[in-house]
Image (cartoon, rainbow, N blue to C red; front, side):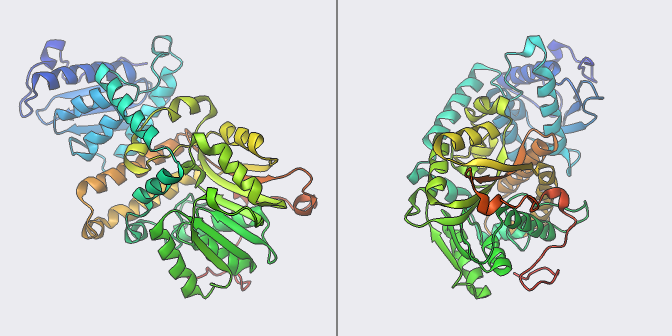
Length: 475
């Protein structure tokens, strides 16, 4: 690892002086010293530059063969150092949201910085002297430890009980249907698409994802479908148009429900589609569904309730039924560590969220149901591009977002959110699984050995619609 150094060749004593144009307090100067020393130790690959308005420059450089990326930060306030020292990863997010620093590369700055930090974390985990450091976000000072404890307690209070689940969902999904429409495509799908190539339109890629889910669930006209987390209703409309099935969808978002009901009415599909404001734990188990679909909803279930989720699916699924899940997943090896932290996503974007690991999902399945895994696929490679499309749409519509009543801090928060997540998928830290579940002995659904499960690698096929044409359905 190349030694980190300052381009200005500053000494420790110089770090405590007040550079021209930036006059830190003594506490801020100490924080500046602490953070720069920490970064000297921590940045083991890639290149990170800090440019202060007074002209001081710091360079932290590691092995560029592992990570060739470079991130250049313009530090506008010494509060940047204080926030990072006292709140670690949340402090970095706070500082960006508050405008304490910006990037010279406005397009990829957040993405590159996060990729460098992730890569350095991976390298450092194998270095003996840093083995006790859980990650770059681990508390680096006693005050950061206190902050981490407070945030964890807040997360604990938000765990997804029946009461909290609706409140947590509302805080994000009820922000404004108009807001989501400004960065999602016409399908209003808020989950990873599946792209044929780099130039493909987001709407087409989302329709392909819907098509894959329908095919994996092997849905036909005689089936009754339950979707747990129906979103804005696009899957409901598409699956009924294509198969003629009966559909029930549940959500905890009043805004989504209102939007979806209008779309269903406009499509004239009220006789086939039923939408409910309902928790998955409150769906009556007196009725059985042939297929259950849940696309990126299980992240809102929570660690403590994973068995209960699968128990509900078990009781609601017909004997020869199929359950299909799509969900974002943490690495098994880091699940217990990360689920106990309260990071940026929980604090700013999704209160109560808990990304499960693959093992957590399958262990809950085993203990709470008779279900088995029939097919598993990771489509996470498509999420970075999906997030990139959302960010592009979001940033191009800043003026419209402000007109809806959201401020500049909100815009910076969501810009950070899109890029933070994109880095996690691009670095393959996160995955996005599609899993098909069924009970043993389900010959009715899987008895034909020549009917294979579709895959994202088959994504050069045409997207079917109900009338047999290959044109896209209108919404």
